[in-house]
Image (cartoon, rainbow, N blue to C red; front, side):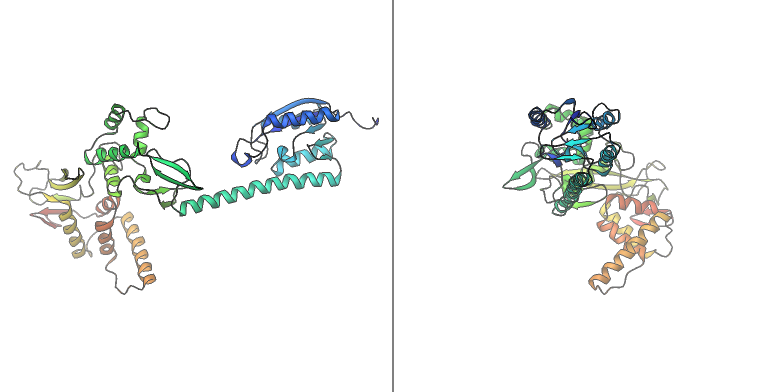
Amino acid sequence: MDASQPEMKYCLYARKSSEQDERQAMSIDSQLNEMKLLAEKEGLNIIKVLEESHSAKESGQRRVYNDLLNGLRNDEYNCVLCWDASRLSRNGGDLGSLVDLMDSGKLVQIKTYSQTFTNNPNEKFLLMILCSQAKLENDNKSVNIKRGIKTKCNMGWRPGVAPLGYMNRHFNGIKDIIPDPERAPIITEMYQKAGYHGWSGRKIKLWLDEIGFTNRSGKPIALSQVFLILTNPFYYGEFEYPEGVWFKGSHVPLISKDLFELVQQFRGINKGKWGSKQFAFRGLLKCGHCGGDVTAEEKFKKLLSGEFNRHVYYRCTKKVDPHCPEKYINEARLIELFGNFIADNAEVIKISGDLRSEIEKHSAATEALFEHYGVNRKLDKPIIEYSRYVLNKGSFSEKANLTRGIENSMYIKDGVISFKQ
């Protein structure tokens, strides 16, 4: 050995990423076995063996790799033996640390199964190319994965594991989501019991335990999972991915959107308390006969099909006058009366700032839609257009926001709405 040549002391480093992007890489045991055979064949002096399972995409995040660098800095060894350059680095920061150690003379040689890199300009350049190529592969995979996920969502297929009640299916190279024949009917029945019968989450949980309903691991589901199921729009055919971006699913819905919204109403939009019933128009009116509050109640009628029809009625509480003559009015009729009242009194109705903002947004969107499709119709006053949409097609929360946003006091007397008692 040349007296000017330092003794070659090797650290054998093996890494296997824990992520799917490197699932084709050799296992750690295979890397160690192959490199030990190479060391024995070429008479390499291995001082230390380091191994870890960690992604190399981000700089400075690998604890064992940092130990490798510290060993070089502390002169424990001066050479690195590994399967290939991508095992050492897939990012610029970790690669720069290796090159700096080469430049300072702390790292004499990197030896892989097929190549050797020393403090030589051409060899260092090749090392940087190989590690940069590994980084490029990672970056491209990330872009391709995101593009694939977006395409899948646009096709209506939610990425990831399907919610309980569905199954991920792989058939002839096609991946889709289908109802779980055992659990899907139970999920549907859960919604029916919550929506049509007003069952609480705890009561549903007890029923599921009685019939032996389990998750995919064969364990009874927790109460928290009951609530997650009963608030997941996936079951009526829509999903959010990522947060704030909504798609219409291509899977078979287990329930209707109306049933889903009915369950959310029972759950309590604002209070978050299961079983607290809320009604869109409660608090809107007072009784024109006695001045008492107008409350709401619901009735369910079972159909021959086994499903239930829900009917909502509004009436005077009769707390001011137990003999108040004001009669019940059903919600459909109240919606009709309320819509006509807004149309007749649009000029004098007072609205809150939040409602005004919603009305302005709706008005602008409607005008743009009419212009796009060439609809030749003059828009009514913004509050009339908005209330017409909300009362006929809006969600429960939109109806509730409309009633809360009107600041005038309104009364109902003998089925007629007015500003005066």
